[in-house]
Length: 348
Image (cartoon, rainbow, N blue to C red; front, side, top):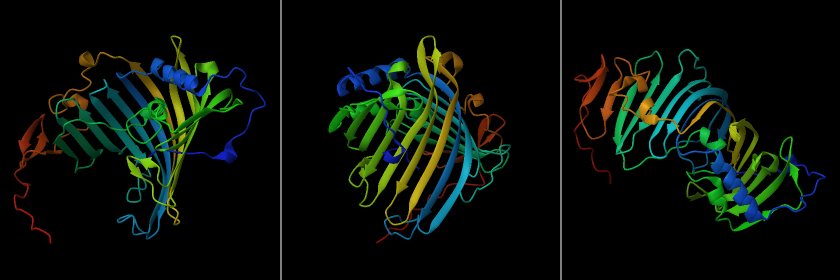
């Protein structure tokens, strides 16, 4: 489920080549940072598509309330658009296929839809809907700030759980070294950088022929290593393997366009979660004119920013008791469904 950490040694193979005059570990990390900086931007629009295979099974372990004695597996598909300028965020996503156990065969013609818009300030817009069916809902929440994960972040170098780019995490590593021999990172010989971070062990295959871009990564977290600030329990092992990175030369810059990642979280009691993701960018636009494009305009004022905002969608505002309906381009009070003002009983 959460992308984070792996080392699968059986998969590795040593090259016969040597890393003569290899950069030091610190120099190699600097080169990777420069590579990430050269092909990234805080402001961009990315469109992409993904295929995800999931498989999970949970025993009756009491450490996971609500996730006991259940299992599921299947394949789902997504089409996404992601916009950001470093502060404001917009996400539009359609998903279909075997989404989860309760929705094993969602059609591409009637997919699930998810739209999120955070335009700075303190307002977060979220809309979830199954296309072509009633029951969609918009929630307007008050927030101080907002950060989110997105599939596109993995190809930008955000490989670990959280909102910090992996090269920054590696700079705080407890240990950092470069392997004495170059190794295959796919079809090319790469330098391999190994680090022990607070989130686990990280190995990075960096391709000097493509300006030290990432060719492959393997990460592993065990008991005591942190995921989203929380330590894994005894017996738990989380591994993540990234490969299949593809780059395109755009005006002399190798831009990442594609990648695969495999996540395996074993809980040590027979429970596990597994996922296999293939993500491909279909479009990337750096430093666009977001104001001219209206990238972060409020969908309630500019419905073109939410193509599934249709008549009958319920709209709720976190600071109001009144519920609304979207009708003919405006909000009207939904008199049939008022929020309860009754104070819930105190539980002792």
